[in-house]
Length: 262
Length: 377
Image 1 (cartoon, rainbow over the protein chains, first blue to last red):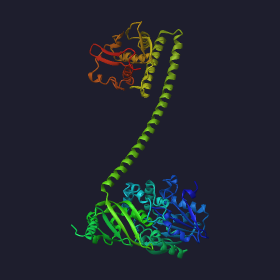
Image 2: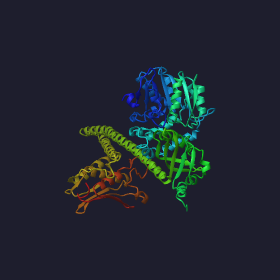
Image 3: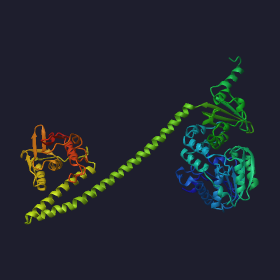
Image 4: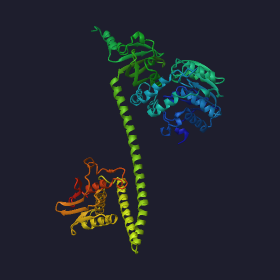
């Protein structure tokens, strides 16, 4: 089992500065399918699935290793090194923004630039810190996942079958999109929403761009501003796109912002 | 009743047996029907301008934003998504939702239609299924763990018993052999008496070890295996009487048995049982009265009675005599572990027979009865 098959690493394009795109909690590398191809002309693009998501090797899932974001960051470092990435660009969405920050601290040679889309170093409010959620709300989320109440297996399966309206999404693609083992999803949710990486921000040395959505309930603007204020020399761009997934809802705006930055 | 087809369509929309929502390109509600308003307790004007996620709990919002919103963007629709809406009164409204995007020729999003079906019963059913699965998994884990633990305990117990038996019996055999050697040489009268006492103690200890081993191995209570053979009954009984007589030379033991009677039984077990009964009679019987043993082998089977004189066993104690670790006087040091009568009764049962006791001021009588050969092996 190589890191390439373990994380279902897919590369495309060619160029002097490799770009690694990392998906967040919920779906898989298809999150980037409307964004990554725009960079293939000038860059080697690298897409992958976190272990437990998409078409990664579920057998490689280790509850201990992935109980903290460090486990995911270690994987990212392994992927970067396996592909001989140095001085590359990291683009991470949602929780993967912090995974990229951790990886850049573990292996500073990998990335000279970080693009953090909807980052949050801590989702739960703390004294003097606004994360957007109370501990009770996060517990409710984790409990509701455990209850299977959001329709994990029962309701997701029919939703991803067939797609007459958009035939360009082949069945293979739709079937893998957002497919997650419920037990792993629960653990990933716990790891994601109980993480606290505020202390790591100040040690970042890579150039950093924060892409902040308007009206993002998961990573509110105040949280994006906190990240900007704590990563030395970072800049934040507020997108017109609303919601938590501008890479899907406003790919052109995201592409333009990344291009301007790099 | 609506009069025209248009009115009928309006009525169908407003009062359909499902909730309807239309979202503008910005994801905000532009239209909804009466059915949904009734379910939620929110009028159409209160719903207008809200986003779908505003109708969800915080947990539901996170899940919606990380899963269903991207799914809708990717596929242009989602089907049968389970959502928990929050009603005006704060109570949850369990629904299944279908959603479909409508885009123009350029691919720009025009609006998104959402249809909601109540799913309270279905949700309860799903919840019960999940609970049942989790319970079953937990129980299966538990019983696997217990099995493993019991298996380990049993293995450890077997090892312990084997070592214990070996360690206890070896020195006993050495003492027995030593007294045998001494008895072959001329000894003073005092020495002979001491050697007799030692041999009696060896016998008693050997019997105790047998009892403890049987009990510890859990081989009693149905687990007792018999090794039947046909032998003269008198031989087995006389041997036990002889051994105990050596230990208690001052006591009188009267044995009445037909010297020609042959009995098919596990004679080693029979001897163990008889030895326990006889030792019990000697220990508890009146010192100045003989212990009488009457063995009668007839067509109805074997009847073996061990009788001693002495005080009657109290009625309360009679109930417990055959229970393991029962001792009439828990502080007594001479009575052993209280396993003798229990094991005797188990051996009787294994032979398809039974052990009874009667006791009054005149005598105490333990009677073993067993059928001939056709009892369970």
